[in-house]
Length: 255
Image 1: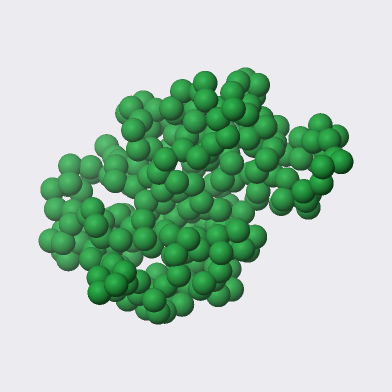
Image 2: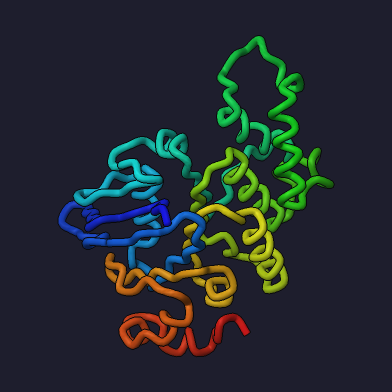
């Protein structure tokens, strides 16, 4: 299979502090991978390195076979990678539909031009409607983003993330702050909208991790100490000792 995202001996230091210490990871196209680890393990830093918000101190990162070291986030995005953030980042005074349409414009070849009317861009409008249907917000299309519930705002952010058609999706704690029932519905939504895509997600809820991921990467002190199926990771003595222990036993794969 083709590798969608690869990290080879990636290191990141801030001054004299080493955050990522020789991380290695190879994610195949179409895999859903959860990145877990204790607080301070470097999970958010790793996401920022992959998406271009930070540059590695050393090592190499590739997306779809292309080196992304030092590229700006928008250039990495145009190479087929899109990400969401822990905190919703929406145009709060635009409608749900308008938020999605903004996200699809560039991917469809539309550039900034003051003489164009967005309502006339049939392809962008049709794609936005498709995304709204996928994220189950079609009935809320005209609502302002600021008036959505928290779960709806998170769903809209997922829609914005996938709207451009990127093949690699990064989701940073997508279910944080949700109730148990909201989380269950949201996991189903994520599975549906990332079908056929490569997914990397940072997640603390072990039920979500085991219900969503094909593989789990365990990051401890800036190193990937395990990368395997959920069953193999749960049984890994090194992982148990370094991080999971009774937490994994309680999760029992979300059951």
